[in-house]
Amino acid sequence: MHAKRGTILCLLEPVTTNQVNETLGAKPGVQSIFARFGFTEPDGSPIRLHSHQFRHWLNTLAHRGGMSQLDIAKWSSRKDIRQNQDYDHMAPEEFLAMARDLTANDKHLFGGLAELIAKVPTSRDEFMMLEYPTAHVTELGFCIHDFTALPCEKHRDCIQCNEHICVKGDGAKKTRIKEQLALAEAQLEQATEAAAEGYYGAERWQEHHQATVDRFRNLVGILDDPAIPAGSLVRLTNCKEFSPIRLAIKDRMQIESPDSEIFNDLQELLGGE
Image (cartoon, rainbow, N blue to C red; front, side, top):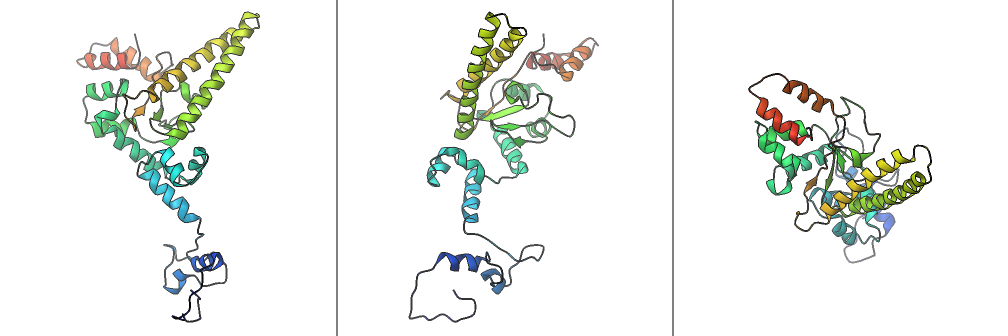
């Protein structure tokens, strides 16, 4: 594997780590195997790799192929499944395409989102392009909020948001969800004790933590339900959430329109009265 010397066919020697790294171009000043054969990056710069980068590449391929987080961790001989996220280099556009592909299957849709698709007079693909204009990964799932229109109105309180989606079967995310549930339950207990002792404002915190615990428990129940297939998208609704869209629909309902039946369905799905 020497860059300049010829290969002696009758002698064998073990390949060292330094030889592999030098061949891949990791050592400056040493001609890599890519340079010897005239391969470069698209911009003309030299290709330089480290042996560990192949591990990142293989793990990213596994994420793209839909392999479960537990299987990826076992395949990579990891003790902690949370380390998977450091090896996942999927672009936000790829994650968005995966989410849209999942929603193209009726088996992966249930609840309000499935009902809305069935009632809105448009094709499934057109609806999904409008429903999921963008997506980015969060610690619990992924967010479809369009930040070009508005900043986050929940201050990253994702569990309370209608625009947050979880994917059943993601072991690492499920572990974080259960950890967040345990934390929320502890905070609810503290707020309940403070309210009982008459601390000012404790009742409002108690109400907020109770709503958080209820939503986490609902989400965990869905993720643990064996009747729901892995890969399903889980999106919790929040009927009490302030929504300009809901207000606009309510105002529109006061005007007689041939589309009133459609608006009735939308209002019901959005949790309106």
